[in-house]
Structures are given as structure tokens and as C-alpha cells.
Image 1 (cartoon, rainbow, N blue to C red):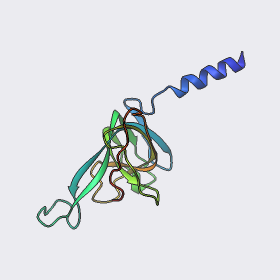
Image 2 (cartoon, rainbow, N blue to C red):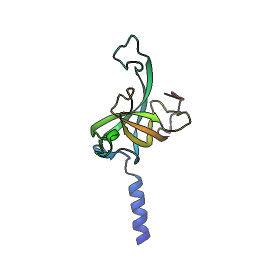
Image 3 (cartoon, rainbow, N blue to C red):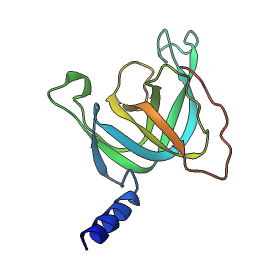
Length: 150
């Protein structure tokens, strides 16, 4: 009977979606897995990050548009990640590895990583995710190579 209950619990827990609407998550070092679709967004970069568009360089960033909004709880003990954010529907993805990131543009994916508050002027979403792993869940579509570096 114990084995049956344990098996049932494992099967049940494995079918829960990674991010439930309104779920409150924490900043890193905790790892979170979020589900959404990946897109490219062009924004103003250095030297003025949009304050002087004629002189600013345009840069492409990778955005994860979430299937369900999330909340991120701030850490008052950490000045870098002190602020809380609510009803987040998209995140900027940041490369946490030394290897180039390959993205399945426009496809549904599960992304695992650490949530971070704004770290530089190019982060336009308030909260970003340092990517550790991306898995495509759009099995009937082929992945295309996206932007390899930021």
C-alpha cells in the first residue's frame, strides 16, 4: 500500500505545471522552472539606453513570454534583489553558461534558472532569469538557432 501511495504521489506531482498563475517565487540562488514561449525583442542599448535614440546602439534581447503570470518576492536582506514584482508576464533571459545559448524561437519551452532583479540598463522587464537549462515542449516543431550571445 505504501508503494502504491508513493507511486501515485510521484505521478501526481510530476504533472503539476511549473508555474501556476499567481505563484510567488523567490530570487536566486533558488532555481525555478517556468513555461512559456521565446521571442526576440530589439531595444536601445549603450551608451544611453534609449535616452538618446539617435546615438544609442540597438541590441536584441531574448524574452520568455510566460504562459501564466508569476509574482517574485523581494529579499529585504539583499539590496540587489530587494524589490517584489507582481503579475509578471514576461522575463528577459540571460546566459548563465559559457556556451552559446540556442533557442527555439516562438516555441513553447520549460526554462530552468535563477530569477534576478534588474542588473543593468538593458534589462527591460524588471525581473530576469539566468538560464541554466531550456527544454522544448513543442515536440512537433524544429528548433532554429537564435541569438547566440548578448
